[in-house]
Image 1 (cartoon, rainbow, N blue to C red):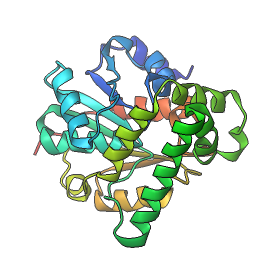
Image 2: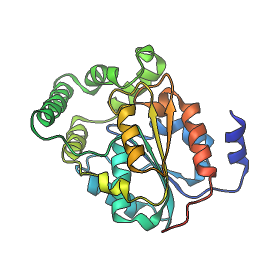
Image 3: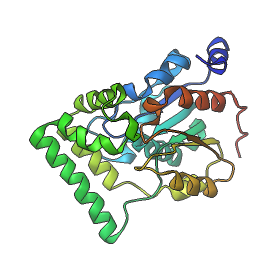
Length: 253
């Protein structure tokens, strides 16, 4: 464990920390972060079969009792985090967006290709089971060196804990995802952007564009890492989050 992480663990309790998982993910995505950050102050919401990004954001706001909190979102969870900011910016002290995006589904042929690809995965899940679907889908979500590794199997275990109906609901949420570009541009809280250098689902170039849209943000790039950054490079991601949590809060505008 790094000296930075140890320093945070021995310091005074941090603010409430809300960790938002991505598509078909659960608290296993945040296992290392929950272990090294103040555990009593960490909450991982369960989205289940909620079928819209907006409704997921409303669930977060309703379920977190603390009046203010720091918010971390991975992948789909990053989109939910931005919807939380759209609805209640006064409640968020800090924001971290990991391996995510801000654009709605593309118009025309590009959007249809995304829709068809997601529906094909859903059909596989209904026909062959969630693990079989995950074995194909997750191949593009990790660095190539991790195919068949224990981390890859952990990702498949997590996917298998979900059902095709949950998958269908969350696909619907992503296909109808709102445009979050103006939300990002209007942020005033301390914002961290983090991306695996080899993420092909939410590539680094996208995060560089997001960083340019919000010049006050900080961009962290995790080497030898794909889309599942919190599981692929847990210590490196936790180190960045520790530094983010230790920074003085940005004064509200």
